[in-house]
Image 1 (tube, rainbow over the protein chains, first blue to last red):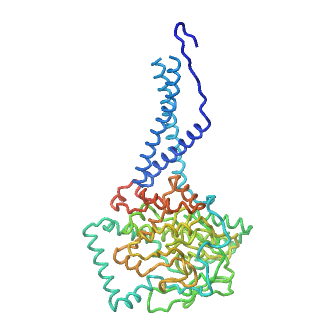
Image 2 (cartoon, chains in turn green, cyan):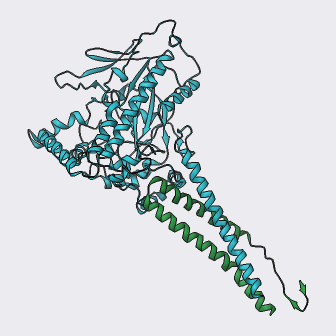
Image 3 (cartoon, each protein chain N blue to C red):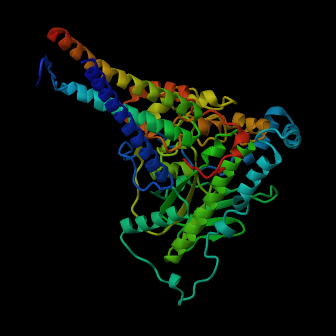
Amino acid sequence: MTNGADIFTITIRKRPWWFWALAGLWLLVEVLLLQTALASVEEGEVRAAAISWIAATVLAAAGVLAWLHRGRPHRLGESKGQH
Amino acid sequence: MEDRRKQTGRRALLKAGGLVAVSGALGSLGALVTGTGTGDHVRKRARWVKVVDRPTLGEKTADFKRFSGRDMFALYPPLKTQREGTGSFEAEQASKAKRLVAWINERKPGFSLPDQQLSEGAWTVMRSTRPGTGLLSWTRTHERKPTEPSAQRYTASPEEMASTVKAAARLYGARLVGIASMNESYVNLQVPQEDEKQKDKDIVFEDVDVPAVTDTRFVIPRKMKWVIVIAIPMDLDLLSRAPTALGDAASALGYSHSAFVVSSLAVFIRGLGYEAIPCVNDTAQSIPFALDAGIGELSRLNKLVTPEFGPAVRLCKVFTDLPMAFDKPVDFGLVQFCKNCKKCAESCPSRALSFDDEPSFKTRGPWNNPGHKAWFEDSYKCFQYWQKSGSACGICLVSCPYTKGNEAWIHEGVKAIASIAPATDGVFRIMDNAFGYGKQRDPEQWWTKDPPSGRRG
């Protein structure tokens, strides 16, 4: 894409199949943990609820970090190469 | 360039946040779905509950005979006297009574006056029953006139009949219903009489048209070849407060509910033009009939464990001559799980349950009926703990990993995996402990729950 004097490139990378498989698995486990947490509150199982909430939160945070980490090296690598 | 990077990063963060939000929404939706599901009756078994030709445990030998009918309540006093001397039973009862009164005055959690009276109230219906009379009458309580609709006999295919009867049973409060064929060896020899001076009444099978209760005998017509077996789940909120009077209330309510269900179902069947004998714990052994009817499997507790509610159920049954399609026994991997688990035996405060790796034919006292394979329990020790704790305990029922609220999907998943992969049993047992399942809950908290009760499995 040309914009006057400054030239930069946006590369759209297709994520590999295993990434989506992993994301699907992550989502499944996350849903299961959240359901367990909510249901355990209903069941009056305090410890099970606490463990499930913690696990769901940790997994959610790990998912977010993995997503961000996955994007960063490519951009950095390309920017180093371009500039 | 730096701005663009920031924008791309934010987009990624938003995407991730979106995913979390979606999963959260799905989780909430799931909780709602399962929440409404807990009130449903179990019509269709989960796929991991396999139908088999014979029960997975309880195989019988030639020694298997009809049981006397004298339960632990009747057996305990003479056994206590025999083992610990004359007057030991009376002294134990007096000490227990004194203790219960003291606990009322102390307002001991789980044994305060409201706690104890909650249990008494829950017993009301059951305590008003006696085999063969009133709610548990073996015959019509009023004579049919030819003009009455109930004078007609309803006919349909055995499958339709089974479906109709099961629907009626569910309406009255049954959560699991199965049909077994009559096996005379499961029927007790006698109905013990409350008055010790009176002779126990014999239960006999005869080629007669209607059941009869006389001064000396209970007569079951041989044409009654069908047994409707019913499981009533116990209230887990109450049971998880065991061993207290609140835990007792769960048992009491289960019994009273059973009496209501079988008596209502018997009247329904008689109205269709057939005979019916409603029974709770009396008249016959419920567990072997329940095994044949596919209600559950025999466990280390030497009690029935159902796939849906674990051992936290009360069993009752109705004998009838109404032709119905029979159900078959089930296998959901319980026997193998019990071999590995042993959590109930470890939780039992009186060490009454078997720690043996394998079930055997070796009985442990006159309370056990010989001639079948099982993990036999020491009911004497169990009953002694009842006297000591001032309650009917129930810890083993709560500690079983199959006793769970039915809200969380994961319970179903764990049971499904355990049914096909016994190698995972040990892990599930460890996880069950780690998640804190089966622990006694604070009795005082029960009264402030909103709603205070009503959850069954």
